[in-house]
Length: 188
Image (cartoon, rainbow, N blue to C red):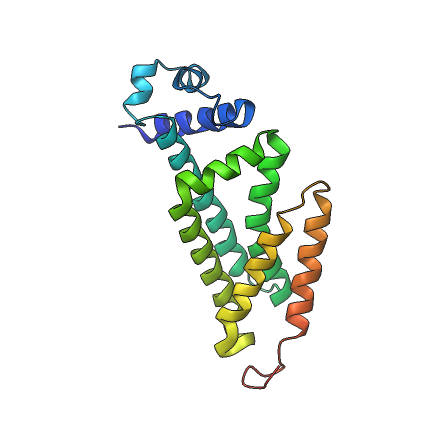
């Protein structure tokens, strides 16, 4: 099977889900948007839930790739690297809200259909943050990473002004970094 065709189907599925919402999207909609017949689409995805799940995997993988790249940015200070890692997550949510009036439904559907993927994504993102913090936070790196990921998730609750969570993320990361001990073995 062609990966290009699957990517075409997932891109079409994203367009349909953001335009119509999950409940109102049909496999006919996805096939039409992909420029394929419905039977051809069924060769790549079992149903719209499967398309949604595969799409979520693609989006999470892209976000994690961005986060990993940000964590490894040479020459960037810790606050900048952490901000950029967490911004990969925040921007995923902001993009969905910007591109769809059905974002709330799609995010809710995500919890039901892809809860295990969301958990794995959050765990892997937290690992990336903890890795970026390892030198500065020492044995507390994972605990600090948990706090920063929770901060980012909390910022996603109110997206009425998309610049506000961006500013708050930058401020929150700066505050956490400023609170890290000068030497990782020192108490905070």
